[in-house]
Length: 379
Image (cartoon, rainbow, N blue to C red; front, side, top):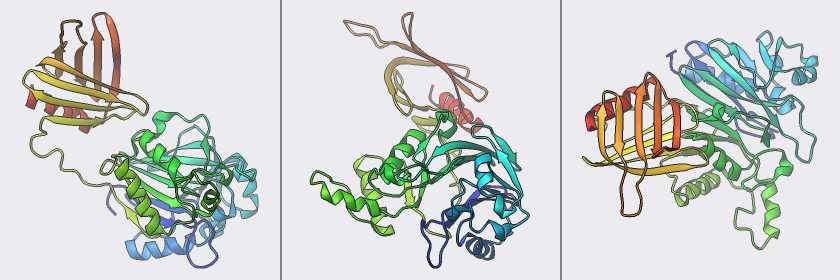
């Protein structure tokens, strides 16, 4: 198999009474296979995927989010394979005789070649929930995948951990917000996608049953009944279009057997142009646009705030960009100093002696090279 990462959707169903599989994914990197959750029907789904895609149907390691039967019922089919879960979860799996390694939320561990960080999750709604529940942030091959289903809240999670994933897989129960389910809604998934800057997202779990309660509220304008997968996809597409996020984010209703692979970009070929957008490794999006030889705009955006400014007389010194302040009759604007150093973008924006922003922003090596090229081509 290729060295690039890929993800197969093993199951998307919440309550399987016939054919199908519960929420589960397989992540592949090189010849390694990481399975996340093994509920009803997952073993059969993984076996079918092995036949279709040509991988080993026995994973190298299994991550368990929590001990609900819908997520662990098929674990005996994978006997002898290392299982990773929290101590509380392990205590609930003791009858399965699995080879369990306990993990701690917030502490990164390795299941070669995967680097994994579990994040404590609260899935208590009308029911008590499952102690020791987690979701996972998984890195391999320079890519980051968030496997997050069956959670209502994330406890003490570092927001930088989730920033800019290549793929987010989210489990929802309803379209509208219904915390009694113990799971986030599709509406809340929209906010997470925006906050995390998750360009690609799959919705893996949905029933919509609780949305029927909203029909009683005359002021409610969201769906008031369960939607079919096609109807749900249409609702999602409509939301992205209305919010002006169509093309920026891709949110798909997952189907069993789907395979995600990172899209190949031709951004390194040919001139970059007058505008460049850089998604930092933590928190920020940088956007620079050369309006003319004497004018440039710069914006810095995180999940909460956006700083957008205009500068004049841009000039390059090596791999650094310096500008002058825009002046008017009443006031003088700030100045910008930006420099690329290794895989860090150093940004200083100051109005006189008053700093508006000063910080070192880590970016990928590829984006550092793109930004350097942009500066040399335009200034």
